[in-house]
View (spheres, rainbow, N blue to C red):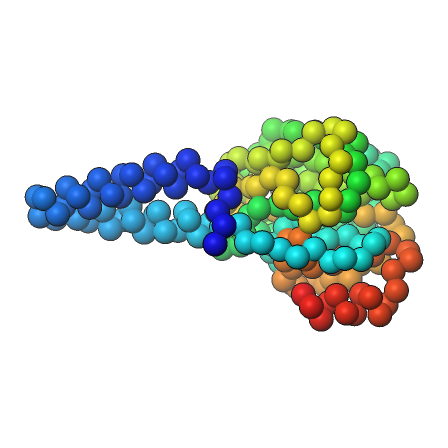
Length: 229
């Protein structure tokens, strides 16, 4: 199992502390050392689980939008996006629980044209307030024909957003670009003419699940990909 590099420091520190406490318990048979060692070891295992980074197989179909995050669809709404698209669009909101993989992936191949980090509050990520008021990092990507806009949003526990993209970067759909540490949310806004292929409460997989399609995608291709994922 791959581990996200963003979690290596905390995993290493937790591992050293757990190993030290276990050795102290072995040599002293002190119940206090033993109890703390158990708690620290459990924390270490949970941290390793949280920062897991499994390989994914992006769909080999043009003109599709891939889910940027693992999680549950909590909203599909008509919106006006004024930062980058500057037009009406369709927003798909994905809630990530602490049990989901938190590594984020690029939804489409193209060039990063817009990037903005904004400080904010820490409302629960499943709340609609979090989209506008929470700490977030917004990204706009164009493939030359279409544009999409998405936002990494911190939650009540997620207090750190990592985004490794830069304006001008050439990106490929499905590639890793960052992580939100602990429970969080990702909103992706697509052009109004996009066909949304997911439903409320549906589970989606980052880098694999197709959440929308631009004009020109054949139904047979889409059905074949959906069966694979």
